[in-house]
Image (cartoon, rainbow over all chains, first blue to last red; front, side):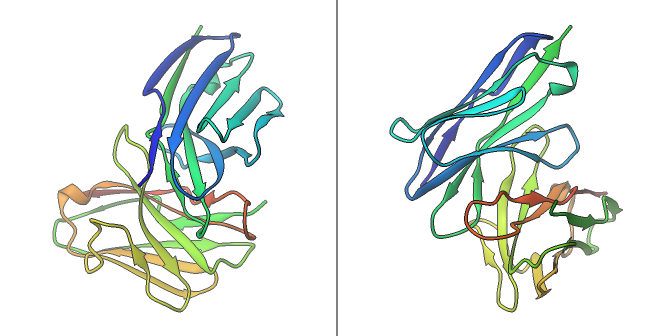
Length: 110
Length: 116
């Protein structure tokens, strides 16, 4: 089976930095996705990590450690519009489906 | 970029009726599409994998006779919720992957189903 854990909720201040962690236990790991989902909308793709290390894309960065079964999403210079749910999803070998964690609801306050 | 179109975006139906949701890949062909369901404040749960030209693969606990999936072409998959009940009220989202391997899944905009 698979087990994907991320915090349920986080609160941060506008302009600050926040790190959202995701740990996973799975067999046949191929990579890990991060998606952003605003309330009532479909998820939108943020990043995909296959190899260990940090991938930076503007204000968002994602890190992966395959040996530790650990990833994080780093959001810098937080804006109010970053208030959303952030979903990590494990991509397994042998299929194209993703298994999603429970999502982290981030609230950005002024 | 790749676009997945889902229709309708919202539907309200009476208990006992059936509802069909369409998912189209607009600028790529998708031999496989995925149907997810999301209850309020919960994450996406995979319901089934739709395979073009063959039977869908359902996840454990999902009734295949209640959630009928048809993937008749490389750009269209449909999910029909048969004999809907209030507990079927949820957000249904389809997704597809343009290209192979590590390309990200692209999601439709979802369908908010309310069964009264």
